[in-house]
Image (cartoon, rainbow, N blue to C red; front, side, top):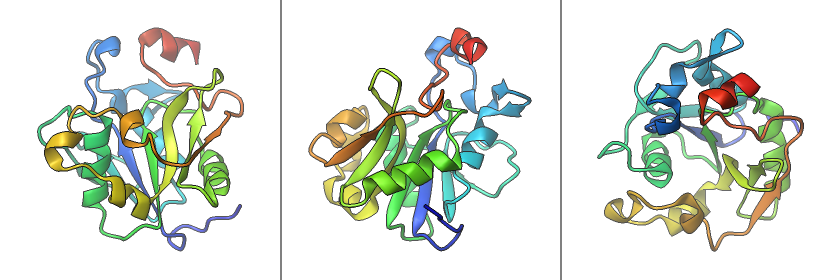
Length: 189
């Protein structure tokens, strides 16, 4: 599936503002893998997106992105996703979601997710055990329709927000479904 940049109605929210407790509180966005930060890997994976909002602290990047933070900080993935959604300048048809700690996700991953989502509310990558990962695409209008109020979104689990949606689970190719929660995870990549 060919998705030329800037013409797809595809925008993305990159989740990069968590506590990283199992990574000793390190800033995951700045952790390096193969000589580049996890943030740079994530931005590259979203190269087909017309616009990318990073929910996390601003750091230098090689591609223009918008940085924002949920308020209060550390509100969890739903609060971060919706804060990022609100920071978009463009009105997306599909909204990509990617956690910064998945350096093996590529543009091809998001093309496959888009293809799988046709006729559904969205599609998410799984790990090799079939567990849904924080890499997916959602119909933006559907997300807007199920959106909780500001207070309810803080601390809400993403699975709860998405529970009633028709989502396709896409198995990983190679290691793309792996994330970096610990230093051992990074070493094992």
